[in-house]
Image (cartoon, rainbow, N blue to C red; front, side, top):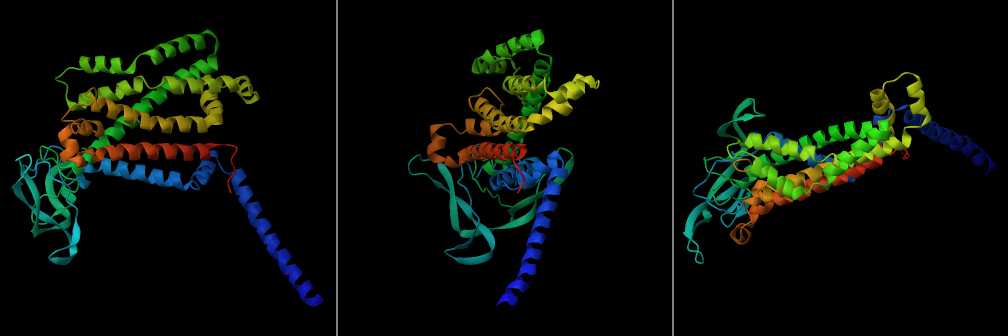
Length: 389
């Protein structure tokens, strides 16, 4: 019995030594890694944030390459399928099963209540779904000419996964184009406001004194401007002959120019709290310029706050564009955004007879939730007091 115990002791010691060695190597890697490497190590443990980031990445890809993923353009109409319900691909029906997905054809009949003609599925016909089908000429990313769509029907019929609106336009295709418009307005608006907040808040927090007081008075003036009357006035001031592209850039600038005060004040307060720290004074004595002191020494100390505020600003920009377009103060047709699509679906008839027109609202909710969860994950990852496990 004693011999067995003595033989097991060296093996146990060796196992503990190997475990300690792995722990030592892990800690050496942790303490020698850069700040961004540590942020990535912490972030990839946040599964909800990873899922949210994947959802946003998918939405961005679908929006950027909408000409390929969307079967039709934003203005293409199917006059034989006005306010048509969604067509869900299936593999089986009353006539049997098939290894290829298909949708039923349509026939026209009169609604017994409204006495209007409507398209209904015809269970006797099948239209098979195919990949990489020819479509209308378009330009991918505005430069690459293409005539192929990801999916469609083989016999030249039209496929409407999410139905059509009152003018026969495909809701699925328009939603993808609207995703690109709404997300790019959000990104561009946040970048504009972030640059302004970084410059204004950085100068106020680093300089202090009368410069800080003057900047704060300007910030207060911008903050107290009533938003809705301001947007109403700006919308009325936009010339009616402006194209959708010009209105798009105007909306982006407006959202960016009036979205910086909150972030600027947070940056200013953080800089005021650390402007007298030893490492800041050492950088000044070493002859570093104020711009380098702010960007290289002061801002990295509260990167987590900046990341959280920046990411959380995205859903506010998206909601602002959607709300303004919904009430008619933002983008105007023929531009396509989530707000424009919802604005065209706010009638009682749409709510009762075509509820699929509210599908873009689900995209708005999904994008806002994804940005919020992603911001929480980045905040936890950028926290310098958390340790990698």
